[in-house]
Structure formats: structure tokens, C-alpha cells
Image 1 (cartoon, helix red, strand yellow):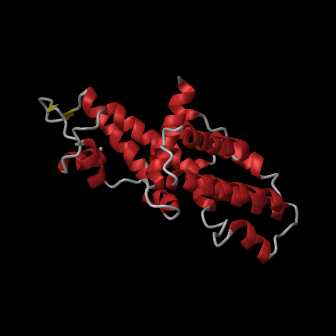
Image 2 (cartoon, helix red, strand yellow; image 1 turned 180 degrees about the vertical axis):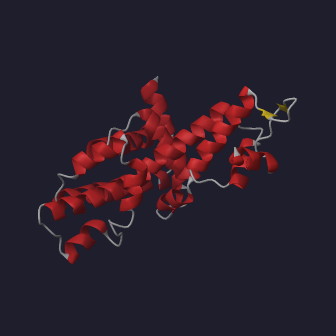
Length: 238
């Protein structure tokens, strides 16, 4: 109740009316807005940011659901590498195996695989994607990780070449690269269907950290790859 009072005070959720005794009376629309507020709060948005989002006249209820789905899906994508790294370290400790500093750097680079272990477990420990990634990556050796790294670097090179070579995002070559990306995720980490792949594409533009992963390869690449994923999903779902 205190939370609802606060939301009313700041104008985030104002009840449609009051009873004769002065109690707030909330309509179905008010309760739906509350659900949206709680969903965005769980995703880490501030109350000011939520107010701006919900008062945007260009976004309807379906648009908010899609945005929340995209944010959640991309968070899985962002954390899968962290999950994989943590699981690899866990397996090594359980088996009494420890990677040398050189091996760790060769596999993980300058990323600390234990940095986000607590966040990964707290947020995604009960998801199917986490379970799949845990099961698969728990069996990977150093050579497996190096193969994944080599595949990713080769794919990055070909994506940049397609983009800088003027191949349209809706062209077959670009869509094929998007499909290859989806298949890599499914092969190495977790099953990635087309709806999930669309959600990942949305976050390449919505989350600046992921945008920069592609922009550092070529300016404008994030938008290009997003469009290629969408075009490939459209092609597959016809």
C-alpha cells in the first residue's frame, strides 16, 4: 500500500477515483499500468524513466510487452558468455583442474569469468537457457573455447566484409550470416529460435554496451546486423 501511495503522490499511477470513505479506487487500466511499472522496475528502470516510457503516446500495450521481451531476451544473450565462463571454471575446480594464467587469457581474454557469477545465478539460474548453457559448456575443454572464439572472429570478419561491401541487410548473403549466428548460439549455448533471435537483435540497438560491440568493428554495423536478423526471421517464417 505504501508503494501505491508513493506512485500516486508522484503521478505515476493515479487511481481513477475514490470511494465514499476516501479509499483509492483502481480500475483495470490502473492495474495494468501497475503491472507495467513493476515489470520495468524489475528490469532496472528508474521511476522517472518508467514514467517517460509509459506516457509515450507512440507505444501501445503490445509495444511495451515486446520491449520487455526484447530486454529480457537480450539479457540472456549478454550473460550467456559469462555463464559459460563461470561454468568452465566451476568444472575445472570440481575436477581438480586449473587453467594456467596463459590458458585463461587465451580463452577469456581480459574478462574475469567470475566477475558476474553471482548475478548470473541470481537472475538466470532457473531459466531453460541457463540450464542448457550450463549443461553444454560444462563439458567444453580449452580447445572447444578456442574453436568458439575462432568461429566468432571468422564470422565477425565476414559480417564486416558484407556490410562494407555494400551488400544490403535484406540480401541473401546478409541473411545467411544472420542465420549462421543463430545456429552458432543454438549449437554452442542454448536453443535460439527466431522469436528469441529477434529479441537479441532489438537489444543490439537498445543497449549501448551491445551496440558498441558491433560499432567498434564498423560504424553502423549494429543497425545493419539488426536488420539482417529481422529479414532472416521474416524469410524463415514465411
